[in-house]
Length: 224
Image (cartoon, rainbow, N blue to C red; front, side, top):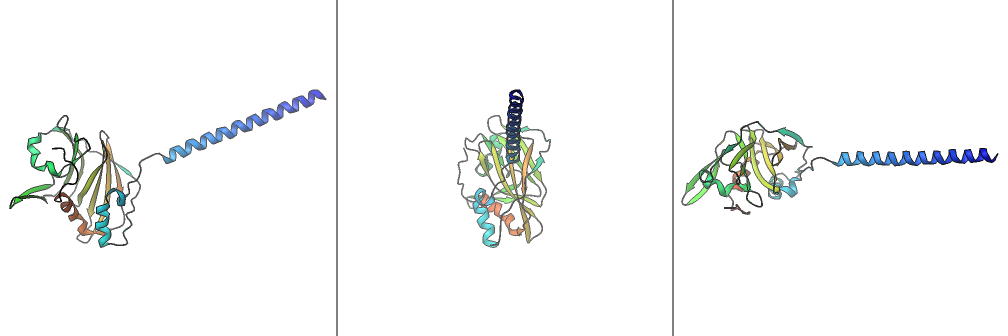
């Protein structure tokens, strides 16, 4: 009788251990699944990322929500990296978007805009028809194209999220009266950009916002 009771107690103990092990295993799996689902690109918020652009649109369209779709990866064209000379782009330097230490700059002006000088004032006007964005490395004087779009798209503004990651806001025209917004995020050395699209239409006049920003007095250090 004692032997049978001892065996029963041992069986119950083993069952309890197995149940605890299964519970811990399940908890570990659930934890791993939670970590996987929370990983991935953090969707930019237009209102906090580009507050002036948000106010510009909301002033014309009060119901504007600025909701962005999930990220799509956009592969960068395999265009060879080429060298550049700072003196060749000297007039455009005030319009580039430099990172914190001025070693990198986003260039969406030298290909897309024309410099005009009038009465001692210099300004930029759209040259078109296409849009090119390049990353300039001032340490080794190299220029890498990271985005090329057709005449319907305009880069409106850009800022550096950290020393190696830049975020760009753009507008895709759907005619004179309508456009849609896009945001790009690019990290130096990556082979693709994160593309965030907004389905909600915005006023077509938003495309002119780019020249307004570029021709405004600079608010950040240009590094030179």
